[in-house]
Structures are given as structure tokens and as C-alpha cells.
Length: 238
Ligand code: FPP
Image 1 (tube, rainbow, N blue to C red):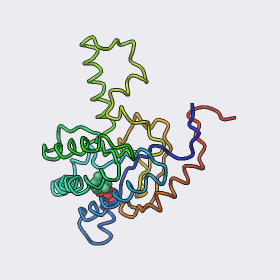
Image 2 (image 1 turned 30 degrees about the vertical axis):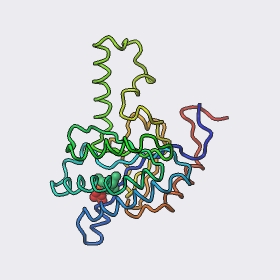
Image 3 (image 1 turned 180 degrees about the vertical axis):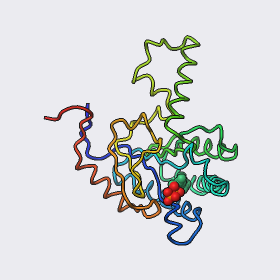
């Protein structure tokens, strides 16, 4: 049944525009990513007041490896630094952190930090922050299908039980509700392989603001607009 709530419980964000933000200031792209990381902090903090229980952010896609070696290495350094510096504050603010995406290609030092932060915040009951790192929607669905096929081959799952209720249990997001609202910053109107299965009924907001300029005030405005939308989930409302 459609949810009555006018506030999105789960907001997912494609944080785009860091490079252009830096370029406009005559600075290297990594300067924009560092500014973007500071915004992440503020946006996570804004969630409780806005009623957002789940926040999922797209930090690095399976396609982002195609960027220059300097940019990829800089981003990996930034993720490690973010986890080291923010772990205690996230814990104190009752944030529960999870990571989605394929960890196999990530360097072990980063994976250790990710595991540590997940473990450290596992008992927290406030905002659920999910960071998509080396994440791609098709890759996630493919990995899920592989695990499901394995369970069928092992006799753990009857093929007749495969349905749109059982399949998502194999996705990285299996413990999360589907997103109600997906926001993409920087004026691009694409979903770029983000939460493909999960966003089937999500509302989308494509806004011109570049991610480093996405303030808590802009976030609150977007959430406010969501409240004015009528969500039908394929049904006809009386
Ligand atoms: C897209 O902007 C942004 C990324 C690929 C990286 C997102 C990373 C952050 C916001 C930084 C840190 C995140 C965490 C979780 C600490 P772009 O570089 O494609 O921008 P452009 O389209 O203007 O070039």
C-alpha cells in the first residue's frame, strides 16, 4: 500500500558536480571532492530534523575507475581520511553506517576501515547512512543473481520461490527500505546505474546546485517539495 507520509523516509543522493565546482575556482578536481566531503558531514547531520531515517550516498561508482589515476587515488585517500576523521563523531551522533558495492577491487586498508566503521556503529539507532563505494546497480544485480544461482545449485532455494520479494534479499541493500526520493545534483538528469532495482517507485529530483553548494537549506527545500507530490505506486488515487 502507498505510504501516507509526506516526508521521505529514505533519501538517496547522486552527489555530482564536484569537478565543475573546483574548475570554476581554478582549482584541481580533488579540491572539489574535499569540499564535497565536508557537505556530506552537514547533510548527514541535517537528517534527524528533516525526518530522514535512511540516507544513501553515491560516493564512487564501478565506472569511476576510468578517471585519471591521480583522481582515483585522491578519492581513495579522501574516503580513508573521512572514515578516520569522522568515525567518532558519527558514533557520537548515533549514526549507523553501512557500505554497499563490491569491496573486492578496493584496497585492503580501505576495506578494513569500512568494516571497522560498520562494526563500531552497528548498535546505533539514529540515521542510517549508507555509502555506495565501488557500486553499480547492474553489478549489484549481477552479483545478487550469482549468489541466488549458487543457493539454487546447493538446493537451498527452490527456483519457484524466486520472486520480487525473495530476490532483493540477495541485494547489497537487503536490510534497507527502497528509496522514496532520489536526488541528483549539478543539473544532469541521469540515474547513472544507481539503485536500479530499488528506485522502481522513487521520486526523482534533478537540481542544478553543484554538490559542494548543496547546503542543509537546499536539502530542506527539496524535502519540502517531496511533501507536495502525490505518489501513486501504479495505483489510481480516489
Ligand atoms: C561526482 O562529481 C562526484 C564523485 C564521483 C565523488 C563523490 C565524492 C564525494 C562527494 C566526496 C567524499 C564522499 C565521502 C563519502 C567522504 P564529479 O567529479 O563527476 O563532478 P563533475 O561532473 O563536475 O566533474
